Structure formats: structure tokens, C-alpha cells
Image (cartoon, rainbow, N blue to C red):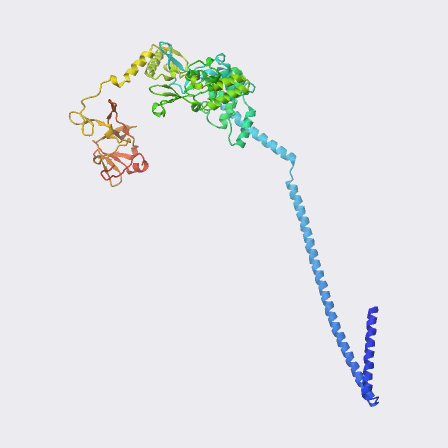
Length: 599
């Protein structure tokens, strides 16, 4: 307020000062002339009115300006009020939305909140349901499984019968009637302890302790399947025996049904048999390569000795075979033409039909077996070092029964005679042959093996036979009769060097539809046959001959295998082959054109 009063006082003083200045100027101009006083007052009034007017205008302008300022201020306040209302509304809405969202979230959390008790009950129910389903499946498979008698397992094993010559030498094992190879069963007392220990150490080290299953080994195999992608074998000796005895037809299958049956039979074997009986049966049934089933047959085949006479190295050698018996077989029979080095030190024996060759692929597994025997306390360190230093090849001696090739026709004759003798005693022919091939008979014969071998060697010597002479031949080397007809074609001109047969240009005709007509009466036979009451036509190579090392060989003709749907005969008896044959079998039947002839 004091500031405003000061301003008013200053204004009034200013006005008075201006009035004094005006009067002073007026007096100077009028020199105090009274006539001019009225004029002065009039002018002063005018000036005062003018000032009042200006003052009013200034005040009006000021008021107008203030009104505008106040109006703007009011409008601004109104806008702020409206904005505040809107903002308040928005905030209220957001708060409401947040409250709603919070409520929804709370509701959702409520909806998805894990009820541990209910979850455990759910899992329990799920496991229970799965157990019931699995139990029902297992029960149904066990009910359908054939019944067995674990106390009579040897009734399931076929045992080879053996033929002996007049000197008690083995000349043959009768296995052709059986789906398996040679087998001779032995009792546990005849098994060397080193052999039993060798199989246990490498196949099932907990055999004497478990009740059929090695769960530690199963879990380890599962772990290996995740870490290395491979799963190792988990079958115990009892499981392998169950598979070999009762699941022969499905033992290579990897199905749940087969596994359940195997487990069921394993439980029965462990329940009814002692460990000695199980290992005895296992060693009599296991396949060990070289056509040998059981350790006695393998011992004779590889070492020509009984199983009770095997040493530590030989025991480990047999124990290393079951994992891959055919690949690991210590001796391989190989045809002479497939031998790359006839002078190899690994050839143990040469015969007319086979070479018997030492196969040492299983060497690393054999060494592993010996080391495991040592680690598990079955053999001492010195026994281990001696066995590792020994050469297995020096132990091998293929049995005479394995190499006897000249006696097959004689064995057939003996089987006929023994069968007839058993039938005379009241046995059926089928039962007699089953006994011969699976009953483990020892049959004495009158054959003198030494004389028989001499006779067959002389018969195989071509020098003991005269050469063919005075044969009539045509220009192609074909043997002809006195009338000139071909009796035998020369094999070397009948077929090409690669074995192909090529038609001459006068032996066929290429037809417009792509088919081929082969003329009858030429180098190929064409004739009709009846197959399942249907008439078919055959195409056949004619008989040929060849002479090698001065020896004359006659070679019988053979049929050219052409499916029925590709061939017909025309009215003249010629054979017509459809074009479709050459499209379907281009590698076997082909048509090529050469500058000189057509083929």
C-alpha cells in the first residue's frame, strides 16, 4: 500500500510542477495582461479536459488490458480445471483398471496355483493306472507263453549223433536233420573250473549272487545309451539260457513281448535250478561258431580234445566267442579259390574242398577275458602272464570229423541201415530218424577211413583215366556225328569269354513292335512244358563240352529263365519275347547293334 501512495504522490507533484511551468510560460508571454487571464483559464480548462480525456482513455485501455489479462487468466484456470478433471478421471480410470487387472491377476494366480497335494495324488493315480495297464499286459503275455518244465531242459536240446570208423575215429556228425550244428552235452562235473570262471568273468560276473537279473548293469546300460548313444548287453547267463532254450525262434527280436517272456522264463529257471545246473545247461546250449553248439562240441571242433582237458588259454578262447560266434570263430572254412595267399602261416589244414584257416579276430576279447579272470581272483598274475604269452594257433587242431569230406554218401547209407533196424524194433520211421539226428547216438561202422581216402584220391587223379580221342569236329570245334549233326557244342565258341550268349544274325528277327523272335532249330532249344496245368514254353542252352589240362568235360544244357508273361510261341513254333522284357531286365537281356551283326 505504501508503494501505491508514493506513486500517487509522485504523480500529483508531477502535475503541479507542470501547472507551475505552464503558468510561468503564460506569464512570460502575456506580461501579466488581465485580458489574457480568461483566455488562459479557458485554455487551462481545455487542457485539463484533454488530460482528463487522455486519462480516461488510458484508464480505459488499462482496464481493457486488465480485463483481457483477467479473462485469459480465467480461461487458463478453466482449462487447468478441465484438464485436472480429465486427468483425475483418467487417473481414476487407470486406478480402476489397475485394480481390476490386479484382481484378475490375483484370480488367475488363484486359478493356476499349484496344489501340491492334488498334484501328488494325480501322479500317484497316473502311475497306478500305468502299473495296472502294464501288469495286465505282462499277465496276458505270461498266460499266452508256452508252459515249460525247467527240470527237464535237456529234452529240448538236440544232440548230434556221431559215426565212427572201424578204428574208432570220428568220420561224421549227423546234423543235417537238425536246424542246429553239432552238440554233445556234458555234466557239470566234466566242466573245468577255469572254463566256468572264464564265462562268468566276461559274460556275467555277478552270476553267483543275483537272482536272474543284474539291475546295476541294466542302469549302467541306460546311462551309456544317453551318454554315448550305444547300449551294451545287459543279459545275464540265466537270461541267455532262457532265450536259447525257450525263445529260439524269436531270440533275435527286440520286442517287449519277447523281453517279458524272457524275464518270465528267467524267474522260473532261477526258482527251480541251482546255479550249477544253470551254468551247465548254458554251456551245453551256447553257440560258439564253426557249426558247434555247446563247449564239448566246440572243444572237439577247435582243439580235438574233450572239454575237461582244456587249459586256461583255451577256456578263455571259447568264452570270448558268444558275443559274435560266426565272426569270432577261431577256425574258418574257406574255399581254395578264395584264398589270397596259399602259403600263409594261418592255414592250418588243406583239403580237397576247404582250407581251414586260423582266425584271430577275437584276440582282444580273449585278452580281456583273461584280465577279468585275474581281476576277479580266478587266476593268479603268473597264470595271466603265461596265458597272454602263449600262442593260441599252436593249440588249434581241427577235428577229423570236421574235415571228413569223403564219407557223406557212406553216412547216408548208414542212416538208412540204422533207420531200418530201429523200424524193425517197432519204432516209426519218423521217430527213428529223430533219434538218429537228435539223440546223441554213437554209431560204429565198418568203414576203413584210410583205405577209403586212398581210393578217392586215386579216383580224383585224372591220369588214371584215358583221354577222349578220334572226335569229329566242325570248323567251330563242335563235336559232330557221322551224319554231320552237332552232338556237343564247343563251350568256348558257344559262350563268350565273359559267359554271355550272343545270338547270331540268322537265329533271330527284330519285329516292328519291339519284340524279338528266336528261331527254332538253331543253337537254342525251344519246347513246350506243362506247369500247374498251364502250357508254357522253355528256352534252353544245348549241351556243351570243354577240355582242360587234357581232361574232357561234358556240360549239360540249362534253361534260360524268362518269366512266362514275357514269352509266347508263334504259328511256326518260334519263341517271341516281348519288348517289355528288355526294359524290365536290361542288365540280363539286352539288345546291342554292332557294324557286323546284331546281338
